[in-house]
Image (cartoon, rainbow, N blue to C red; front, side, top):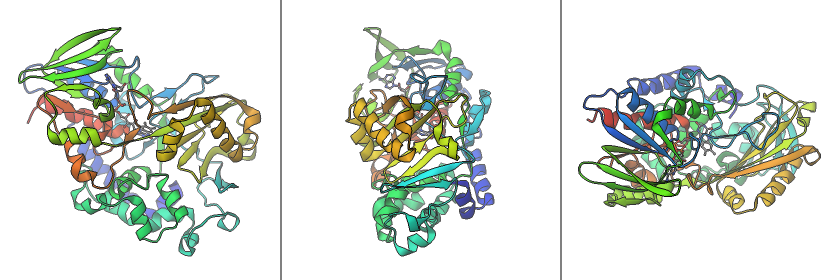
Length: 480
Ligand SMILES: Cc1cc2nc3c(=O)[nH]c(=O)nc-3n(C[C@H](O)[C@H](O)[C@H](O)COP(=O)(O)OP(=O)(O)OC[C@H]3O[C@@H](n4cnc5c(N)ncnc54)[C@H](O)[C@@H]3O)c2cc1C
């Protein structure tokens, strides 16, 4: 949804009420120590582990963060190599909604600068069943010259009006609730049906479902609509220089507390402490702590040995949480040749993917066009060789921006599904999982506390990871 459509749909007054509710949720986030200093092991130096670490160190606790990789940030990762001329593109988190005030507070705290995520001008490309139109940014394609299968009613509102027609009233229901009411029990019935089934019940056409769902048609309606509220904002930001400057700045402040290359393999809890075993540089080490914050994706936690076994509900949640697969493919070009006729490099296509041009405001002549592929299509890409992914992406990019192959210099690809320390991109809640999985994600197990985007009111967002880190720090610093 772009700015024009958003302004049609939602008044600024409603937005500012929603933002002030979020702000209220974030106040008092500091973990104030009420007892003796605790020895805390944090598993994972992603955004959630780092946020927890900063709070606990500030409160005077003794913190060690064990991170498997040699960099902080986990799923906030900016790809700089193999690109030339200092170009960069995001592998994970790309955009920061203007309503995500907690994330924006951290950006400010670490003195980072922001740029608009989307170009504010230029034309997008719309490619549907092989037909291509260049459409001024924020406007709808001309449907009379496109081979689309929309119903007559959908045709009247166009692609840009589909969200309003099918989802706006539900978005308003979500916006009307305080963010800390997550997982929104008053809207529980929306958690029992899939987005696709709901849209079909409303009479939506196949193309309308493809356009709206971007492959997430088996997501629960509640999860999809709740997430779409974060997208339905008048401005999205990105951090100048790359979004991973945020976790790097956070990690810099925790330099003495982080142990990189430490792969956690076993967690054993007794009534008085927790023993964490990790592999580092070819040997095994044990860290004994009063408390553990597990800030790992549950897809990874599944493979970690644990004693005693998790409670039944927690074990079910860990086994069944669904992290959506995502792939990305990047093509570096000799020049941003698409700009010659006013195109900004971004595109909408009839596949579950987004097309971005992250270099639109980066210095130099060279550029990057990239795909952001979701769900079944991402699973398919994840199973392909890099060469096959690049060839298929270039075929598509050539249709979007003719001349791509001639200007192409080199490529990179990424699969979050195949990444051993993520095994998926972000949590998506399937129908029924608001009852069986979500209530048990954040609950502590004895001395083990759980942070991570999946345990928060903003699954799939930096804001959720930050919020969960602050929550777990409070659980330890000032137990209720
Ligand atoms: C493709 C994609 C797009 C996204 N888009 C956006 C967006 O536009 N805006 C936004 O705000 N958010 C976005 N997000 C979400 C955001 O990136 C995440 O919510 C957030 O980064 C998750 O942080 P985390 O701390 O929960 O987990 P992670 O970042 O996954 O951190 C977990 C850490 O644990 C480490 N680890 C794993 N296993 C072990 C082990 N055995 N031992 C030790 N350490 C281990 C990992 O290396 C990692 O550093 C996106 C994410 C992805 C993947």
